[in-house]
Image (tube, rainbow, N blue to C red):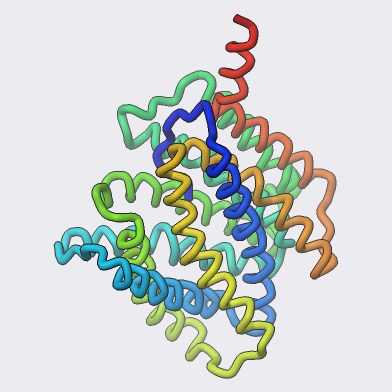
Length: 308
């Protein structure tokens, strides 16, 4: 999830190493989720993600002896964040991955930052849509359309619906960013993440039981390893890295993660599952990268600085 953006012109070497680590972790999560989906249904895969991740984070909170809020209003905020940042996007993307390659899912996931600019501009007075950001947003959406394929936008088969489901998940992430900025300020990141994932688990449990029935208890080692990775590493540990980067450089730098994730996911999908992507997918990713670079503005500032 990409939240409130701040300007960051220089990235410390430690932040770069954390960015690379986060990109590798999240890039591999697409493969892990797709592997688990070979044995379990999409909603069950989400429940198996949020539950263990919440437990791991609460253990971390207990070890660190971090203060835990008892304000009912904040728990309502956790509920909204859990629905917007976990339950909805995780479910939509898991279903989408049943029908499209993991690499394409990771490319479309980069649209989170594009939606984030629009949502922030609509909600917050200090996040106006400047001409540069507007141009970057338009180019980014052109990249999304190119990655999907213009024909798929009019032929609503299961593949195009899966891609639209992934995009719906990215929109939910963007709304969650605004929700978190509005209602979860002042909390320690670990408590905020643990509360959010707990709320998401409480939502997903009855939904999963109603739609898919009881999640399977006896799973193969490969599936268990995949769940362990995307729940404990790609969710619990990744959130700790995410907030550490946020503290070091500001959230504008996290735009870079959305560009670093797809190469990892595409490579792993090709090596492990033999997936291939069309040339339009790579062209779309190039346009997305250009759009995000314009939104971030860092390259333009460096160019202007050199020309002075």
